[in-house]
Image 1 (cartoon, rainbow, N blue to C red):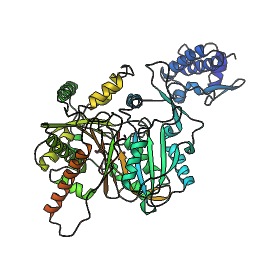
Image 2: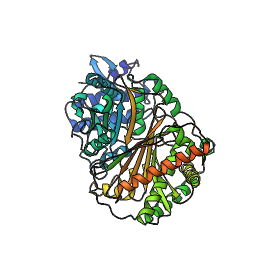
Image 3: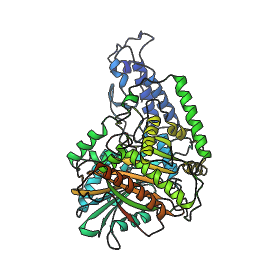
Length: 567
């Protein structure tokens, strides 16, 4: 194909005289380079790459003084469709430009690399209990619609040969819900304990290579004719908040649930409004804050937990499910001026302190890690896929009263989550990319082992949600430990907080005792608050705990976006 300058000028509405000014047009240059790229694409891949690069260069060089409406036209979308005519259209050759590929962010790459190590394996597991049987075709239709909301659920990962290039997603032409959803009949008596035992055997299983990394199970055989839906999904597809948004934005879900939860997610954060209105500090001040944070992390690593070694293999996990009223947990947090997330952190800290006393370990200060849904001051994130969490860390005293612990958790969250906060975990995700694959999980595993526990939570709807036409009764989120001994995930739904304890037996020698200590701490906090309130009416049991005897297994917020999301 021959392309001359008069043809290009004619297609742009320019005069065909040979005395066109020298400034002649970035638009003509962009069109000419795009035509050259189209011509060479079919003949030589090497030259095509170079031509595409020049086309990109001209497309971003700057707007043309004439025909400025073309400044947003993609240079790769201009192709020849006839003699002497040109029109913008997408190239259907199957080649994607670098900008068009859905490449993983540094945080996505972090999770993708960690999924190769069974000791870390940071996948998200969601257990949904339904009030009745589910029609399998309806569940298939539900997942097809979910793939439209989250395109990565119908895409697979391509890893480039270049070790420094980021993996990217491409659509899987063979993707179908029928290839991922399995039916299972629950063994035993059909209790929730049996469900947690099933998670222990299902969660560590790897995903099928060269397919979208997610699996689902439709489980029947529960007591009362109920059904369970179990979703195991890669952390590279969505994080906890994006997974929650997928369920709430789904057109087959309850509209009232979606609007209620969306309004709750945009509620201003209590206790941080004044901090968010403050002016940003100077650049020197921000770097000083970062240096102080780095020094605190170094001191924390030196003060890592030194507990008696457990008896696990590093892969198996133990799970416990708890249920507590949102109102009761919020009332317990009100004594220290916090919210339900602060009460959760305080209860776990108290439980860990009781466990340390039981085994004879003196640990005066505890450290926790919590992923928040988004960075400070970021109210909405239009991207429905990937990881956008903002990880905070805080330390709080092990001893003290319940009010002191809640107040310490509240103050720690304000210090770590404010407009001047540094995304230290995101910076670390970029810095550790050159670390070889065999060393990378070890470094990350040892870093997470310096924390006493991890917390994560997801705000759900205040009213009963619907999945595939069936009402949802309970929702449990299972978060990975990633080297830490204890992880607690909280999911709120219809006025109830559903807590899932994940304990690594290789770190905690007596997981049952640790679960009992945390359970006792939550019970004491709720019952003490109820007694102080002087309620005369008999309230329902504030907490339920299911403990299963199995030893092998493995391993998603209150009502504001201040609460962290699943990881």
